[in-house]
Length: 147
Length: 147
Image (cartoon, rainbow over all chains, first blue to last red; front, side, top):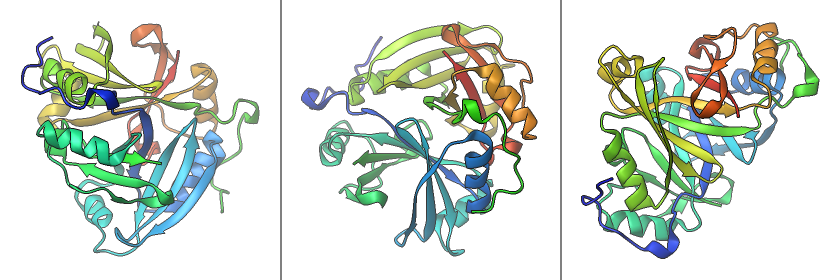
């Protein structure tokens, strides 16, 4: 396999992705979504939080050691409200688990990967996070998550 | 939380979802996508397969105990080719790990969840799979995966 277009960076922290942390799913009705997971699938709701910065309500459903993160807008100006208007309910982003968000951000910057957050910031559950731009990630919105 | 709209089913197999098995990602150029993951992120390619039924080439990148499943169309009539034409590169589906695909399918049927595969079938890597319809899953295409 040819990989000459990407420089090797910070090999000591690789692999950068330690696992899937969560699947972020935009929904209109948070209670209805998590009710189905609890009752039909039997997977438990383990966390609820209002995320003020993004004006969304979050509910986490445990799936093994990962989470389904259901997100519903708290007001019409929320980015998730705009996503729902444009695309309807569905997968909003994927959370990759990393050991160090700042080390991952530096490694990605060196490699020329476009980031939404050039500096890690606080996420829900006390995590440290940074978003990677879909233009550098096969159209996926990726969130780096350090727990 | 109210859950009166969903009947309780087969509690002995719950929770049905044991973890995230994979993130299915539609890409135009398989080699370029996996090259970035190997070189920049440092996550290894662990499996490649041509899936004749869906006319796609698959490559799996290990992320912890889950996979990023990159899918590129082997011909223009492939469902993944149509997805790329319509939406561009991005997340195509999510694989949920289950102990028994047939038990999960029966539980979901009883609960009135719409399935694409009413009978489990063979997937890649020797797995047994069934797809759940996005109309019953918050706009997500879900694949049940029994390893």
